[in-house]
Image (cartoon, rainbow, N blue to C red; front, side, top):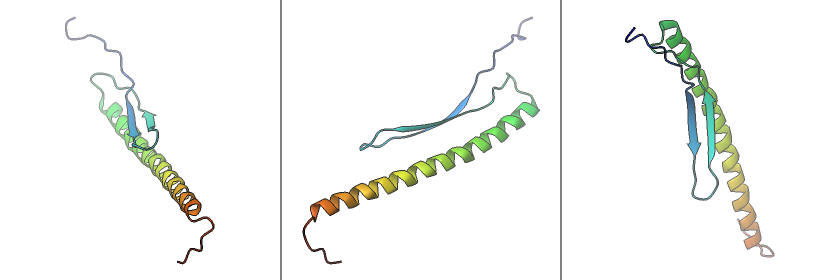
Length: 92
């Protein structure tokens, strides 16, 4: 039966990677449901719903990571400034 070949569904994933020249990279990954080829309408609907949910969760995770990173960077900069001005009177 030509054209009726059974394909094994692949497990797609959603991935985002944060890279910086001054720190290690951070990768965020979320597995998505496998789709048959060709997918049925209900499979497409379920896939798109899962993709939407995964995107929202990944955005939350990325935002939390970046907020922590900014706080850590600010703390490191404040520590460096404190060391630089140690023993000096600092007028603000």
